[in-house]
Image 1 (cartoon, rainbow, N blue to C red):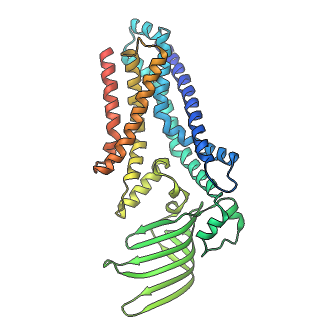
Image 2: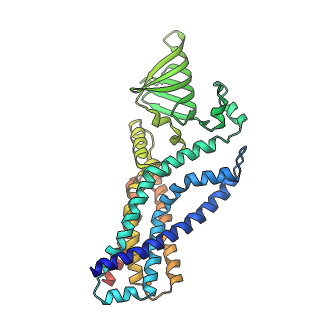
Image 3: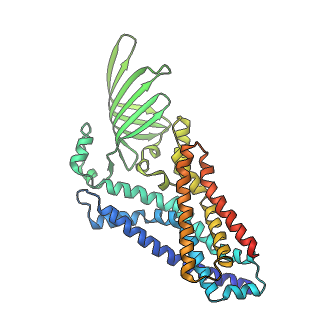
Length: 375
């Protein structure tokens, strides 16, 4: 019963500390992001619009900062307990290091689950909405220039930012397709398709005003012009509507294709990696993002072990300020090492999972060594 009370007390102190660190870091991060957003030169994109964009992307920042926040928050909470000599009392009372680590991991695992849920279900939706919202402030002249071939008969679509005027390429076997604009439903505008046979010879070119997904792996192309190149002849055919069968679904052409890999959910990353590997495309960036998300729980646990080892070991006689300084330095070092090993994996052709896992293994080993020395 006493140990359960101690567990609850430690968990409460750590939870409060982690929340305080989270609020502080998110606040600082949001201020810098706001300054960056205010540098955007878009028509009608002012302070309120930038604040709305920051609010939509905040869940993603919470998820990305989770390992660093939990580490610094755990270090802060343990520092408070150490400064009040409570950790010393617990140790002299016979509470083992492993028992203390278990008490510390309770709130950490709870927050880890919350972070995973935010990263998988909340943050990707916010990022997609933010991209759509921001695209709505592109200048009308820029939109008109890019979509000359497909005039929008409904001006309200442009006003509410439902169109993303960005080129998007898609490949499937010998088919290469470019969509000049996408909308938030995964429909395409100003499409151009090229079909190449196994001899790398151009078979036909097809243009269409728009494409709408009708289900069963089929898209309905509107106002189609198809030019076929045969042995000694070139034929042109026109269709009001034409069905196009493909493995791609609206998910492949939604606003999420505009989102950076690190901002996508695990399911979206798996979908993108599968598609790119099937088509022989370079999927390294998406694989790095995928493994980073899959291994994030391990990184949080490794950093927590390191925090406990530091407080009970080399930092036990230091003041609160010195502990936080060392903690922030270690947290930043961990983050920068992850950012460094990603590009190195591309440069030296290392497996993406190894590049992501290596800093976590080093951190976990250092934490385990620290716990073993004070045990």
